[in-house]
Length: 191
Image (cartoon, rainbow, N blue to C red; front, top):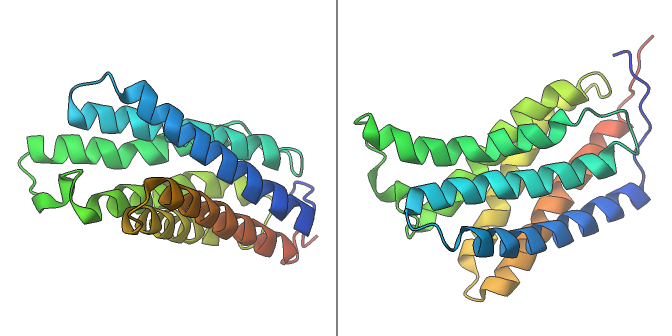
């Protein structure tokens, strides 16, 4: 660990939660509108995943770079991480690998699967960026998995899409924000 890192405070946490909430909600609505003209379901879902990854990832990067020197790869990691589950949904059946009805976007487990796996992969890609700042950076993958998985579950669970969307965004922002603040509290540079 050779980079200078600040201990993240309550103000950072509040900004992180609010920005993630606003950007996720607006981004979600924008992504739905943008992909509305795409007729092929799996491609539509893939484009949606890539866009939501970009919107959330780069907005988080803009917040985080004010606290620590953070590479813009943070946003690209989010695009890649959120895109891969959708690619798997498209290509695994083409390769003869059966994933059962879970690959059906109308199946209740679908949203949880793509968001939770997307969160995990995003976290795995972003861990390397956090390792030079935080001793406990390895937890970031699990934190993202839980945040995106729980958020998507609440989105699916709620009969009112708008309320579910708000709850999903709040959960993602809160869990990932608390995770970052927790990691920053662990003694950083052991020189």
